[in-house]
Length: 339
Ligand SMILES: NC(=O)c1ccc[n+]([C@@H]2O[C@H](COP(=O)([O-])OP(=O)(O)OC[C@H]3O[C@@H](n4cnc5c(N)ncnc54)[C@H](OP(=O)(O)O)[C@@H]3O)[C@@H](O)[C@H]2O)c1
Image 1 (cartoon, protein in one colour):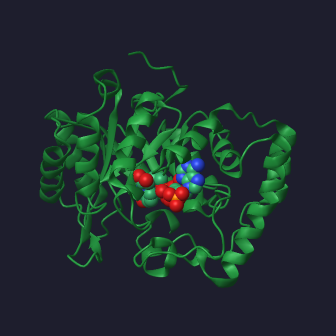
Image 2 (cartoon, rainbow, N blue to C red; image 1 turned 135 degrees about the vertical axis):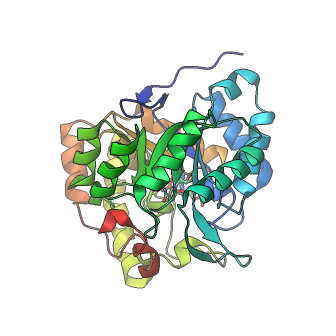
């Protein structure tokens, strides 16, 4: 079987070439309520068959559930698709049996322990890109990155990534070993990286894998005020999804919808296309967990935004237009990128 080529983008000057869209698998195991296992696997298969090569996960997404799901999806995918798949794995978040979050662990021994379990769960002999989910404030960045560099030397990991690092930590990490990409939230309504972080990654030749390009569904055009959220759904705690903030933010979506309708595309496609338009060094991770959502997301690759479109989008959703922080207060405190 052959697969149609999807545009490729480089992950930094030292990382691999990956499809211009990556698939974020988090919502298939955690944080957005129940997901359908068979549909999740079908979505991963459809992504691979459409030419997506980058699968993003975290060992803490459903405490190993997401890695086991990816293992099953890869085992049951056609060989040609499986061979092109690259795994991007986050580690370091500490969980408890009730689903709570209790900090981050970036000690070198912990890094190797996390990696040993991930390799086993993924059923592979190497992880393509490995990254700590958040800077561990108790461990110098150099020690955490140094431990991943040792995993690279031993052949267990191919490339080192970062997640939600601020500019200074990015520089410290890059001084230890080559870094392929920084994973960080970036969307029409989360543009904080434009001031300092993006200029830093560009200066250092580090790519960006952007998550939350639909702001977790908020700017997908499908989210409504009356949507019932399951207990534990991140969006039930996210400031942007609360009361007056939600009303304001959905107003931005309606402004975006007018532009989308004029172009004959969907709101989600405009939002993803806008992130794609920010530079060849940026690879949006889309959190589709159903095949119909994936098809919609892939359609963004065919949307061309001209200068007039970009100006209209900027007017509809100017930088800083969102109401509410992108994480609850306690989680904002873990973001080195927000310091
Ligand atoms: N490094 C980090 O700190 C970090 C944090 C969060 C996520 N991530 C990674 O980034 C990935 C993407 O993040 P995200 O899930 O927050 O991103 P997202 O793409 O902004 O949001 C995904 C949500 O949008 C909704 N949606 C509606 N239309 C969609 C469409 N056409 N395509 C895709 N989704 C659509 C889906 O909801 P329905 O399923 O209800 O339709 C889904 O729950 C995650 O899977 C994870 O791998 C990393």
